[in-house]
Image 1 (cartoon, helix red, strand yellow):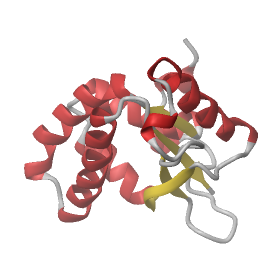
Image 2 (cartoon, rainbow, N blue to C red):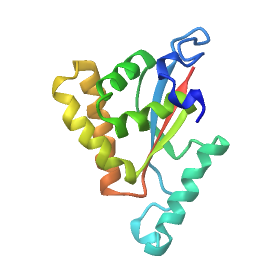
Image 3 (cartoon, helix red, strand yellow):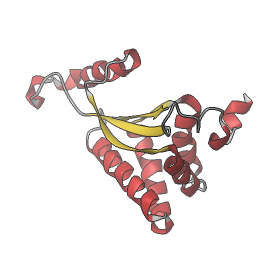
Length: 155
Protein backbone atom coordinates (compact mmCIF):
# COMPACT_ATOMS: atom_id res chain seq x y z
CA UNK A 1 0.00 0.00 0.00
CA UNK A 2 1.08 3.54 -0.55
CA UNK A 3 2.11 5.69 2.37
CA UNK A 4 -0.74 8.06 1.52
CA UNK A 5 -3.25 5.36 2.46
CA UNK A 6 -1.68 5.18 5.91
CA UNK A 7 -1.11 8.92 6.34
CA UNK A 8 -2.80 10.83 9.10
CA UNK A 9 -5.42 12.92 7.25
CA UNK A 10 -4.25 16.07 9.01
CA UNK A 11 -0.78 15.60 7.51
CA UNK A 12 -1.95 15.49 3.89
CA UNK A 13 -0.33 18.36 1.98
CA UNK A 14 -2.71 21.10 0.96
CA UNK A 15 -5.48 20.18 3.36
CA UNK A 16 -5.12 23.32 5.41
CA UNK A 17 -4.00 25.62 2.61
CA UNK A 18 -7.08 27.25 1.15
CA UNK A 19 -7.12 29.82 -1.59
CA UNK A 20 -8.01 32.82 0.52
CA UNK A 21 -10.49 30.94 2.69
CA UNK A 22 -10.54 28.02 5.06
CA UNK A 23 -11.09 24.67 3.38
CA UNK A 24 -14.36 23.00 4.26
CA UNK A 25 -16.12 19.68 4.05
CA UNK A 26 -19.61 19.54 2.52
CA UNK A 27 -21.95 16.57 2.47
CA UNK A 28 -24.60 16.63 -0.26
CA UNK A 29 -27.68 14.44 -0.23
CA UNK A 30 -29.36 13.10 -3.33
CA UNK A 31 -32.77 14.67 -2.90
CA UNK A 32 -34.58 14.88 -6.21
CA UNK A 33 -36.09 12.52 -8.71
CA UNK A 34 -36.82 13.14 -12.35
CA UNK A 35 -40.26 11.66 -11.80
CA UNK A 36 -42.18 13.29 -8.99
CA UNK A 37 -44.66 10.60 -8.00
CA UNK A 38 -43.52 7.29 -6.54
CA UNK A 39 -45.97 5.45 -8.78
CA UNK A 40 -44.22 6.98 -11.83
CA UNK A 41 -41.14 4.86 -11.09
CA UNK A 42 -41.62 1.13 -11.67
CA UNK A 43 -40.14 -0.76 -8.72
CA UNK A 44 -37.73 -2.72 -10.96
CA UNK A 45 -36.38 0.55 -12.42
CA UNK A 46 -36.07 2.52 -9.16
CA UNK A 47 -32.37 1.74 -8.61
CA UNK A 48 -31.57 2.60 -12.24
CA UNK A 49 -33.30 5.97 -11.95
CA UNK A 50 -31.43 6.86 -8.75
CA UNK A 51 -28.14 5.60 -10.14
CA UNK A 52 -28.58 7.71 -13.28
CA UNK A 53 -29.17 10.79 -11.15
CA UNK A 54 -26.30 9.97 -8.85
CA UNK A 55 -23.60 9.51 -11.48
CA UNK A 56 -24.16 13.07 -12.64
CA UNK A 57 -21.91 14.40 -9.89
CA UNK A 58 -18.92 12.75 -11.57
CA UNK A 59 -19.41 15.00 -14.58
CA UNK A 60 -20.26 18.14 -12.64
CA UNK A 61 -24.05 17.90 -12.45
CA UNK A 62 -25.20 18.77 -8.93
CA UNK A 63 -28.80 19.80 -9.51
CA UNK A 64 -30.12 16.63 -7.86
CA UNK A 65 -28.01 17.12 -4.75
CA UNK A 66 -28.57 19.61 -1.98
CA UNK A 67 -26.02 20.49 0.68
CA UNK A 68 -27.12 18.60 3.80
CA UNK A 69 -24.42 19.90 6.15
CA UNK A 70 -20.99 21.49 6.01
CA UNK A 71 -18.17 22.41 8.32
CA UNK A 72 -14.62 23.76 8.29
CA UNK A 73 -11.99 21.06 7.97
CA UNK A 74 -10.79 21.92 11.49
CA UNK A 75 -14.14 20.71 12.87
CA UNK A 76 -14.08 17.68 10.57
CA UNK A 77 -10.63 16.81 11.95
CA UNK A 78 -12.14 16.90 15.44
CA UNK A 79 -14.99 14.64 14.28
CA UNK A 80 -12.39 12.17 13.04
CA UNK A 81 -10.54 12.38 16.36
CA UNK A 82 -13.80 11.63 18.16
CA UNK A 83 -14.33 8.55 15.97
CA UNK A 84 -10.71 7.33 16.16
CA UNK A 85 -11.67 4.30 18.31
CA UNK A 86 -14.31 3.24 15.78
CA UNK A 87 -12.07 1.93 13.03
CA UNK A 88 -14.57 1.31 10.24
CA UNK A 89 -16.36 4.65 10.67
CA UNK A 90 -13.06 6.53 11.01
CA UNK A 91 -11.65 4.85 7.90
CA UNK A 92 -14.75 5.65 5.85
CA UNK A 93 -14.93 9.32 6.79
CA UNK A 94 -11.18 9.95 6.65
CA UNK A 95 -11.30 8.77 3.03
CA UNK A 96 -12.77 12.18 2.29
CA UNK A 97 -9.48 13.80 3.24
CA UNK A 98 -7.40 11.35 1.23
CA UNK A 99 -9.50 11.34 -1.93
CA UNK A 100 -11.39 14.69 -1.68
CA UNK A 101 -14.70 12.86 -2.21
CA UNK A 102 -16.56 9.93 -0.69
CA UNK A 103 -19.99 8.41 -0.99
CA UNK A 104 -21.97 7.14 1.96
CA UNK A 105 -24.67 4.66 1.06
CA UNK A 106 -26.83 2.01 2.69
CA UNK A 107 -23.85 -0.27 3.29
CA UNK A 108 -22.31 2.34 5.58
CA UNK A 109 -25.29 3.21 7.77
CA UNK A 110 -24.91 0.47 10.39
CA UNK A 111 -21.22 1.02 11.27
CA UNK A 112 -21.50 4.81 11.13
CA UNK A 113 -24.65 4.95 13.27
CA UNK A 114 -23.08 2.57 15.81
CA UNK A 115 -19.95 4.73 16.00
CA UNK A 116 -22.03 7.91 16.38
CA UNK A 117 -24.11 6.37 19.17
CA UNK A 118 -20.96 5.31 21.03
CA UNK A 119 -18.99 8.54 20.53
CA UNK A 120 -21.70 11.17 20.84
CA UNK A 121 -22.18 11.17 24.65
CA UNK A 122 -18.61 12.36 25.24
CA UNK A 123 -18.23 14.50 22.11
CA UNK A 124 -17.80 18.28 22.41
CA UNK A 125 -21.03 20.16 21.55
CA UNK A 126 -19.98 21.25 18.04
CA UNK A 127 -18.80 17.74 17.14
CA UNK A 128 -21.97 16.24 18.64
CA UNK A 129 -24.09 18.61 16.52
CA UNK A 130 -22.22 17.55 13.38
CA UNK A 131 -22.64 13.88 14.30
CA UNK A 132 -26.37 14.52 14.81
CA UNK A 133 -26.58 15.91 11.26
CA UNK A 134 -24.81 12.86 9.90
CA UNK A 135 -27.08 10.53 11.90
CA UNK A 136 -30.18 12.27 10.50
CA UNK A 137 -28.88 11.83 6.95
CA UNK A 138 -28.01 8.17 7.65
CA UNK A 139 -31.53 7.54 8.95
CA UNK A 140 -32.89 8.94 5.67
CA UNK A 141 -30.68 6.49 3.78
CA UNK A 142 -31.90 3.67 6.02
CA UNK A 143 -35.51 4.54 5.08
CA UNK A 144 -34.70 4.84 1.35
CA UNK A 145 -31.56 2.86 0.49
CA UNK A 146 -31.37 4.28 -3.04
CA UNK A 147 -30.53 7.69 -1.58
CA UNK A 148 -26.98 8.42 -0.53
CA UNK A 149 -24.61 11.16 0.58
CA UNK A 150 -21.65 12.52 -1.27
CA UNK A 151 -18.97 14.24 0.81
CA UNK A 152 -16.51 16.61 -0.81
CA UNK A 153 -13.57 18.55 0.46
CA UNK A 154 -13.63 22.07 -0.91
CA UNK A 155 -10.66 24.37 -0.78
